[in-house]
Image 1 (cartoon, rainbow, N blue to C red):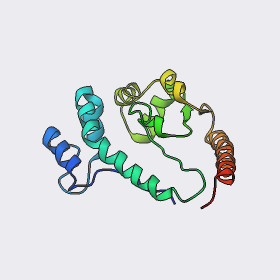
Image 2 (image 1 turned 90 degrees about the vertical axis):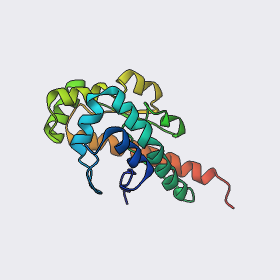
Image 3 (image 1 turned 60 degrees about the vertical axis):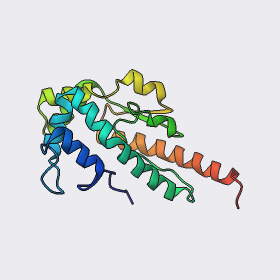
Image 4 (image 1 turned 90 degrees about the horizontal axis):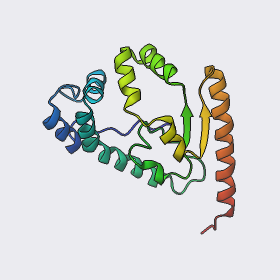
Length: 177
């Protein structure tokens, strides 16, 4: 079952720190966050985005590590969908890094259409992420996302099957206790 993304909860120190530095905007009054407002905060001001990342990422990464630790006894593939994997250096902890490439114009258009961002907000979001050259430099596998959703699913499925076969082969070679 897919696990929900690890995010700081309302009463956690990262949330209190973020509220202390950024106010209530984007953090909501209680347990509910206004993700659009938080997105505007982070992507409109690079210094604030850096601060928010520094305040929240340790808790997010600790949550991911805890979940991964629980999966150690199991053989198989664990997929992490981490938007800032390269930017945060978390790629170094992964056995495989799959980079999905999409032309910039398509990225901006999809953010506008699917997330309701303005074109300038979408461009700021794309600009805040590592460019393809940087992401491809750490990739062990690349999936092109320049066609239909069906084509993307087919490419991703074939790669998953390949990674799963590799994981099974590793598991068969591993000593059993």
